[in-house]
Length: 64
Image (cartoon, rainbow, N blue to C red; front, top):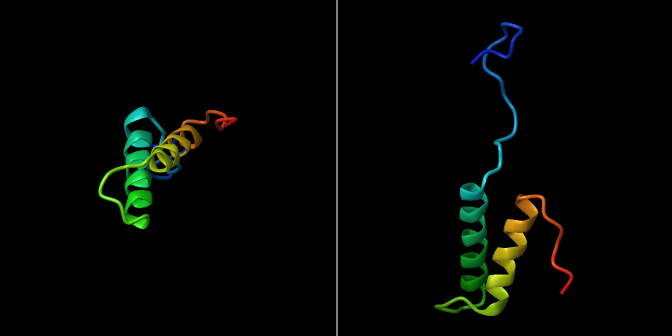
């Protein structure tokens, strides 16, 4: 795809969408779980995942 000036492909940031943000959030929750030495997610892991999703989607952080 040309950028309109004939200088090759348009480069830039990936457009964020639900699927990409969700994958990153799950990865963050899994990293938190592993760092805590757990086999299942705790509430803290869930909060890390939610914070990651909200940050990527441009939503304000949770007030809690």
